[in-house]
Image (tube, rainbow, N blue to C red; front, side, top):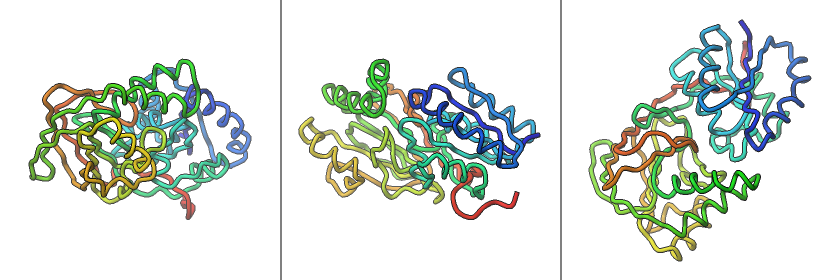
Length: 297
């Protein structure tokens, strides 16, 4: 049994994740905690490693990478007694922003090693778990186009190029939505169910979201023209879009969504499942190590 089990995505952040973790290894060794670590080798491996660590009785499993790695680790730990930590060393690190994790590597390690574990929410999109943001529409197009540019560029540039390429092919969708028993229809470009506050590498999609309030924040961008979208985009970045007449924003525990065509679902930046989809919050499903008061263990 080990106190801390690190799951490292070596390609996350264009290799930054591996580099930073290896630089921190001497500090981890001096921490006095028993620990193990493993590199992931592909999609789904982080979840397998987290499940194995939890079965072995490791007290805390720490995701080292971006939102995709954190999603897989969280998926393995939902509802368990095993605690989770995050070293946000990926490109976007959007969920880390929502829960207030530091970006400085030393401070992030302090929280991961010693931070008190507190309950935070997770959520489901059909039978697929997520911890940050899920949805469909424009954001899925951005992910698909961003992946093309990641082969040639690093950092935030692929995200920005993905956004602008997707803008050239805006595709409105008719959404039939039932939220906590209330039904309505929207013609929209984007539907997001949010546990966290940011997505797509920093877009402040859900400024009123809290990962510990037992609710999902829903943000719907109604069908608008490309010029209108470009005018609204800076407000999305700042989280100042919720009062726009082009946006519908509310909170709910469960949201069922049907579309006039089958649409792929984005889960924490990964594409999986498709509409129709039901989003459900899982209150307090993860014990997450956060900055502040140190745990007793």
